[in-house]
Length: 284
Image 1 (cartoon, one colour):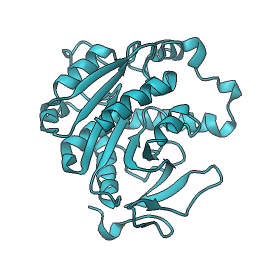
Image 2: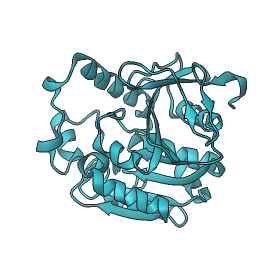
Image 3: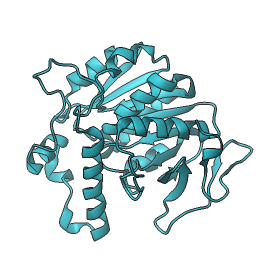
Image 4: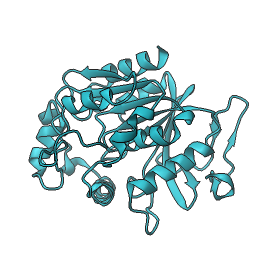
């Protein structure tokens, strides 16, 4: 993977500190890179230990406070998956398998021997798949309210079917304080509304069947050898903390920690506490 087919757009180089230098930045402050035939919108913030951040059902909001807290300690590299944000989705690119191999290619492109991989929700599934496939390139793994495996029996849903549940119920189950955090679409720009709709469509494409998990992934989680933190919002009712606890027990020596007063997005509802948990783990 990687090699001549993978290139950073417009003279991306690595400097003496091994940091990335990219000079293709759009007016919103996002940067761009190409990996194979995929062109990715990338948010970069901070300096230091590199952290590849894989987003969940929506791409990362560049104004999210947790980014500022976290970037005081690490260098965040947060691409938007193809079909999310403003990253175009190549033709016939429509499976989690495609996403995993895209990010394996990206790992081979980065000028670091190892990086920390952190995945939230749907991105946590991708992070777990990367760790199973390419653990030697991962320094530490952080799974946040992650999807990806089947814990219960066939008839018991582990993860709320967000496509067949009313939007009001999805929001109620997503947040500890939905009255505070439910997005106000009337206050969004037209572009933001379009992006959210495209994100939802792409999520459905990648995660519809089997719903938000890989039946084989659970079998291989025991091969993850890097230090792992499984972090969960105590009030998550999209995928409950008991699922996260079971997830952690399948990964050797993984730590399971819960954040109070947070639902499926603890990095949004409790940004300072969330970053405290992550930094403590990274510096342990």
